Length: 300
Image (cartoon, rainbow, N blue to C red):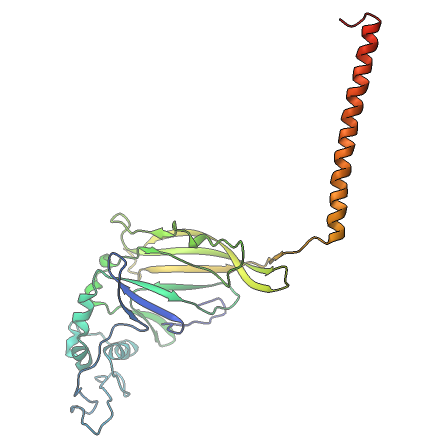
């Protein structure tokens, strides 16, 4: 989201998520949320089971007149209707068939590796990673925190490590502060749960090499802050707030022309001869003065 009011939720394009265990080993790869292959003969919206000549259209259980073909779609429909979800989601046919509850319990203690890219406007804004799913509800945004095993906020762990973070293409000599191994934060028992924020100042940068190839990119500086939200009941997450600097930096590589190179060489050689001449004159006249004093007997 940015200051123009533009918002994008649950971004999936160019985003790849990998489930990882506590040791960082990949468990599974997905481009969407929790789910499993559906078993045969699901419950239809009309109340009967799916026939061989029918197209599947799951019930939303009164929350929506359209089809809800997955457990997440049923939860979204309930959230938009502002209805409370039952404690046991297995009461929904979709959740029961997908083994949703058990899958969430099996994933307790796991982490997530996220890789991808986002297109943003050149204005101040914010993007974040949070637990659950963002839902548009009556022109407002709310989070559907449907991870059953983690409904107690004390279980939320937003420990994270940033492997690479950049605004734009890489160019020679560019150093991104969050690419370092130090871009790591571990949530301890003293922190409680909360929001970890990165405040980023982005500086537009143009790099032109000696061949005339131009790279449009950005540099940035960053500060970090953790806010404990245990008492506030906010959804924990990692937030990146960025602001675009009005200053632009231009790097341009260039070769020194041959004439300038020769002129510089001549200047250096001339300077060496000049300094050598000054030293020679100083030594010569100093020596003569000493010899004259010795002849007059004034120098001992």
